[in-house]
Length: 234
Image (cartoon, rainbow, N blue to C red; front, side):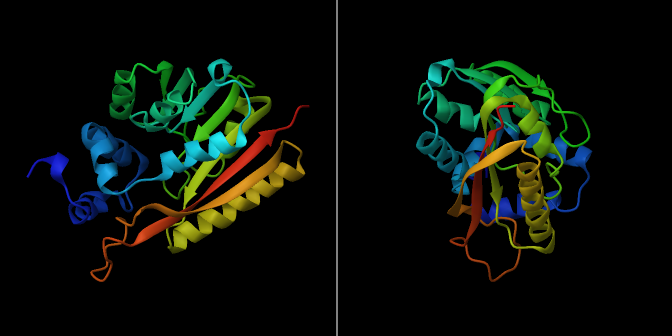
């Protein structure tokens, strides 16, 4: 069976080695996954990029063709492919996997693509440069640490928008990450670094391929949350 014909159960088995690996092993995994990443995510009914771009459309009133977008944890370029259909043209992408960046480069949509392992290396983005900063799917335990959220805010222009999504995977580490993340969001608001615009829940973030219990059925979905903040003008 070719990689492109993997089923949900196949993907549960395929992804299982991600549990408990260190950051370097995770990068190697994503490098090897890059070529079939998008097809596999279709199999997983991965709705987060589509939901996030609709969320952007509902809450952004600028002129898309003039907007500078920082696509953090850009992967193969799924978000940029959807945003370009809405008229956005200027993208800079950042990811920890060179294999994923190679796939993103094939889209021809990014003026720059930068390799960085977030949390261990600083976000390679100029301070106050971007009208929109996006991070979809990477805010979770073992991937992008909560500390990176301040770097996302720093990269935005004064008055710029920071769009973030987090999956709602039910686990001890996932619950702990949620608490830490939302505490940091609130703290940054109290520090007047940004203001909260809206938070929206997603019922069907993606099929749960991370749970390996035998009683889990393919139709069981992970929920998710989308957050929108606006950077302070001062």
